[in-house]
Image (tube, rainbow over all chains, first blue to last red; front, side, top):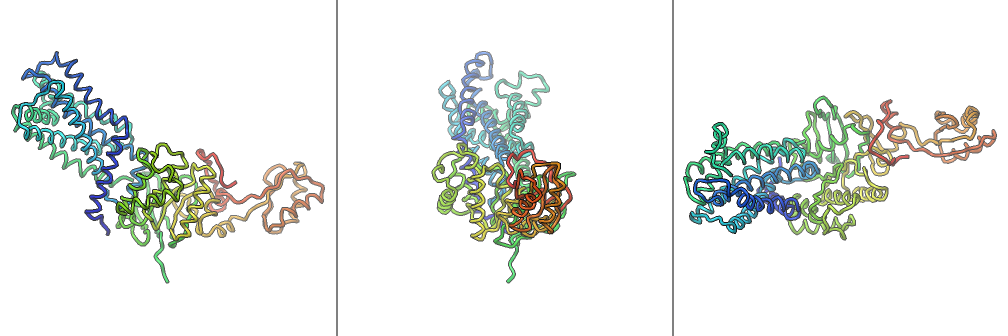
Length: 257
Length: 325
């Protein structure tokens, strides 16, 4: 039985990641999704809602920016699923599966290019955040850790989105389903309002929600607060989700017919 | 000298739920040959190609490509094959050149070789001028050519073409046929599927007729046509009332097979030799019967199919043009 050598596999991952990046740059809808929407969100929340929402430390923009960064990272993950289901529908996956490439590279390369895109997106939002008054109070090291954490969060969610795309196959359905699982996670969380304002059952969900934990961890690392609890919670979630979804997605990909 | 057959299929079975797509199919093709898999929609052609290209896992039986098992050594198989599916599988966001370089790299040609090889196939398929345009701007014919170019960029020893002429205009089809002949002359083994006897006849040394997941006949085009009956001459006389007279007159022309009445004033007889049309015209002239039409008909897939299975090919919805008229 022949196997793909590690060098070949690495090259396959790079080739597929490069393709993903070229797509991002050339698809106008993706550019809007990745760069314009997040910036609009910051501006809308900062100026339209900001005056009405009271937050613990008083500065809504400091409360808001970490949340929007995490949210963008998650929405960016949905692009992984959309791209993959487009490839499935266009027969490109069939061609790739008939090539002597590492089968892991189709998912691996795509999630990598989505991570790279997400990184650019996050830095761009940070820039806008600073312009509208975001002022992190913690050390640079903590700030960097926060960025790494939220990018890792998006990366893990990419694998969930990929799994869903492989399960439902059709691009439109994949997109629709994506919003069904992502919206409750993002909005029933501490992203825009403190969980203390929610009714008990909703609050119970919000407080175990990985999105809440991640946002709380990122907030604490950027503007201060309790770090350890939410950070450990987030890492536990990420580890658990990776262990479940990476093998699941790869198995679904191998089982395609 | 014994050679490993390029394609060897034994008792291959694949069902999708209740639908049995391959029902114990056996097939073999020597290396360097063109094998045409001829059959109507739903006969199992695409399923067989996908099984050979390692895209799906058979339920039972065995399939080998160049001696490698498609399940146990699927990577070994994928190193030797090129697949062009029924629909062009190209990335529209990439340029033609980028598409080919990407596929070349995924065949592990190495960066420089992938670049060189992409240039070579672009040239060969007349796509050099459009090489740096995005594939989304390509016409249907160009997409198909780019898809074929991608199939060949890794220099596969065995090429699968699933209904390659579907949706092509006559000129593109002629180009495709020329391409297949060129590959054949270079020693590439090709398995192509088609619904058209003429295409199989033009391109393949070996034809396998597939029906309901089994091979119902195998042989050269000549052998298959022998089983079906040869070309027939169809004569239309200008007086429908005298069809009976025409039949009597034409019976004298051919002793070599059945004479058929196809309808009012229309008869067909075997083309036993090149003299048959002239003889038919003369004998009808002798009884004072005019001719309103005279045509040589080659057997169609439907004729082959009917002769082999006693059933007619299902009427097609999606194919406006007939190749074999």
